[in-house]
Image (tube, rainbow, N blue to C red; front, side, top):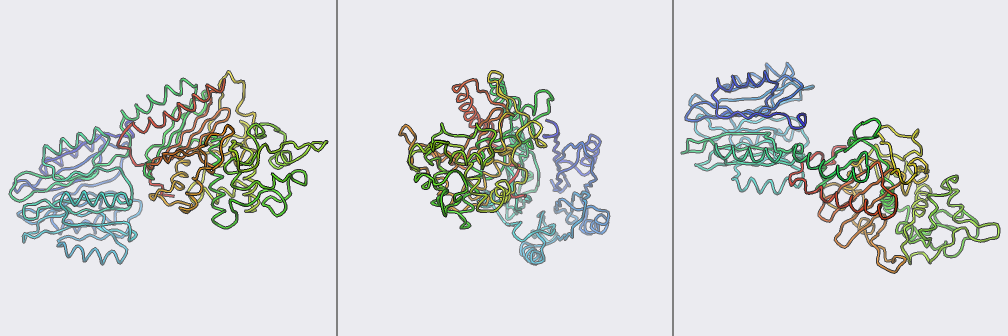
Length: 635
């Protein structure tokens, strides 16, 4: 896991000469600086820095302990060479302020503005003026000016007006309060500086629009810093920013820092493997993909095993899988998007003169009960057809339209091919065919193919571009799609079915990550913008009033399973694949996809489904410190 958690070094308490010598040693070993800070101890310059090992060399410079004039001259010298300042650290000395800065080359150098010697009020005035011109601060450092007043040095670059928040004169308590208020709103602390105000430590921070799993520590003395750093490192948090300063009347240095968790630790990764591998071995699953989000932020996206046993190509987050009946929530969301546009209503009849599909299909006239089937009945599996009449795995010679023709048709003697077994709306009996019909409704109302309509209605608004309908045969395999295997005892090939015909009820390909991306846009939580209104979501997640064939209550809404705890999910499986999509009442969600299914008998299949569900709940306990990989706002 070296590339995920590269070697790290933290230097502290070094004189300028010592720091330059240690820096040269680290550079020779392939380390590069992430941050550097200057300060004084007993009127002597000291430096601290964070270094990370990188296999890819890049040009950077640490320029420590410069006077104000020398620091200002760097902008005329280095910016034309393609360098930009990443950080600035200022500190007061008996000979005037000194400035330590970290510079690195950039593909393009934006307009930059640097100021120093600013009081709090001057900083605020300059910041307001620059903000009006489209510049926002990205680093700040406090120091004591020669006249004994508090001064600030800062860096600005172009950014959107809502991208940053700045707060001054914070106590440790107020710093934590601001983090509590602003981080859930999508801001992360990116710069922090500490200073003395009448013998009390105070802080200035910059919050930037973005998401990261961060830990912030302030007011740490030398030994306490070491303890906190080691404890955070053990949890996978790596130092990103570090500032040191002195408080009046104390010879000791205080530290403030920001640590971020970008990856799981090696031990957490191993725990994931320890949970997944026994399940995959037991059920002979070659490959799996798992994605997880917490409060609208992607925290896990990983592959396990292989795409195909014969090639040993690993499953990656970009691997596509058949998702079987997890396709139904996609269809349901597309239907509700059309309802919001006024192009559909739940109460619209589907078949018959003037209905959504009119008299296009089957033999006329329709039976009176068929005329009563509505969009809501199809969404809730309450159309009146029984599960045993589901034609979607038979009649392989028929296309979708011919299949509906057959279901609504009659034999030569006038007998109905598939008469309803009960009135629409009374009984919930899970029926894939109902969603096949919904696919044709979507086509009729949009004038587009089902696939194109769902892309525009349900996927593109979520930022999803890679999902597509599956092909039937191995030769139809899409780029990045896995290969499907079925348990040897079943004697069923995963490529013997017309998956493409199952479009609206079971025909989609997806990555686990894209399924989670879809889910956070339709879960009703505020962190990510929902593509359906609150009223539509409430209706979609309302349990059907119909009962099961045996008279018991069912846990199904409109395209989603639900329970009394407020959790929502859908599962699905076909020969060679299994999928599960879950959204919990406490704002977590996950998707898991497999490229095999163990189905020698119904009991074994139910056991596999149950263990997969339990396993995904267990994975949530791998760590309390999930890294934030994406906020789902980047597409």
